[in-house]
Length: 279
Image 1 (cartoon, rainbow, N blue to C red):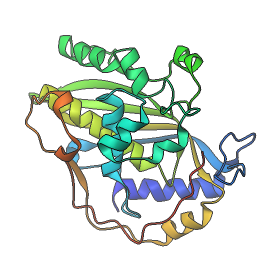
Image 2 (image 1 turned 30 degrees about the horizontal axis):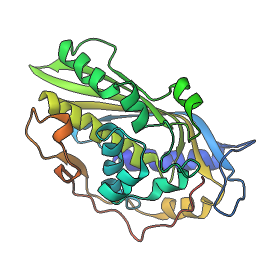
Image 3 (image 1 turned 180 degrees about the vertical axis):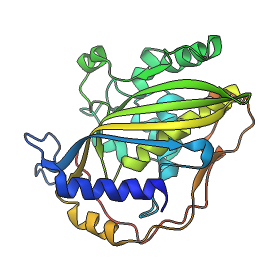
Image 4 (image 1 turned 180 degrees about the horizontal axis):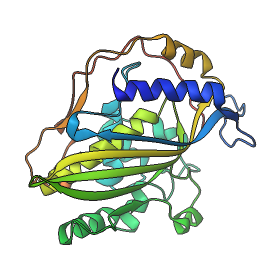
């Protein structure tokens, strides 16, 4: 069994068996009912991308195309304007988090990236000295939280390091996430940041190396337990999906498009399951 599927199954079992119940939960379902969850803390996974290990489950279809479009909205367009996400990319699920009829999600994600020139500083730092240990994306900015309402970032920190092995330079990445919906968002977030890792590696003409994924609070909402058991009853695909970025080495980070990505050998188990989001 592929690593991603095994970890997915192990995490579901761990949450259902050993997880504890949330208290004073913030999220609510669309009908206004409090969205409680069972959760575990300190979930960690390691994938060696250079060996074909990718963090995507085959137990259900994952919407990787819309996930990559969301990633470009944050790190290329560098805006929290929902019209850009809807009109340019056709992605509308972030509309649920619009702040007070502003047409935005507040000073969050892309707006934070632009305000602090995060991508510019990251690429400049890697160009000047790829081996420095300060190549960090940090979306957890308290002054931005004070500036507006809005959902606080879940996947908020990413760190990058390089290694030279047999003359090849490999880019490693570590994603830290404060909170993660195991059944809905886990592999979406992981694959998004693998895509970001691929974009940065291509910008410099490097290979992708390892991807490390730490989630502080990994949970399953109380309306998802039936779906969790359905997923546990399924047999994973025997295929090994791989995300490819079909551009030349040295392609500028900002010139990469969502259509340049290709998820090959992905044959997830169907049908898709329906999940009611906790807002």
